[in-house]
Image (cartoon, rainbow, N blue to C red; front, side, top):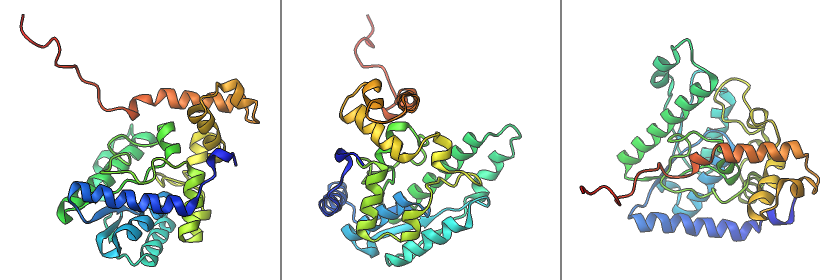
Length: 262
């Protein structure tokens, strides 16, 4: 692992716990809602929210679809129980099925519909409980645009957005996330057999290092490649960043200058 990606896990744990408390205090809230997918990012977010606020103030929701891998829900529930949480189960099948009846539906559209249905559920629960929605995105996904706009990217605050995937993994081990979750292949579980790395075309280890060198070290692709990475992969990561840049900025709108009648 690159030296710049090495994490002081205890320091980072304390920093994120303080950040969570500060975000809720500033907004005048005491509770959070988050989705537990059975994956690493949501498991770590839940663990850190429990440390920051106590289990009584953390409301976890599992949101399976009929095509979801049953193992994902088992892992999500096991992690919730380990943290002292009693997760709400909301099956999103009935919400998205009318859309999926479209014979032209693609895997991309199907995944986006599921992600948005899940976030709609979380914000509704947040309104019912007077809580904020804790996001579960990491920096690697964010820079690659590997998220659904107004779906898994929607949240009241993001505790992990500054951490690359390898750092999320290291911190998860530090705080005691279940080992079965730490070791499983990352997947959004949007369709059977889907994995993040299979969809991206490169590993998270490659993406983490290349993104770090491109963004935080500001190295051009040839210099990144000279550090031991295939130039084709470096260029693919850079293309992914550039092609998804619009997803990382607020919706554009005209300024008030020039709107006045002459």
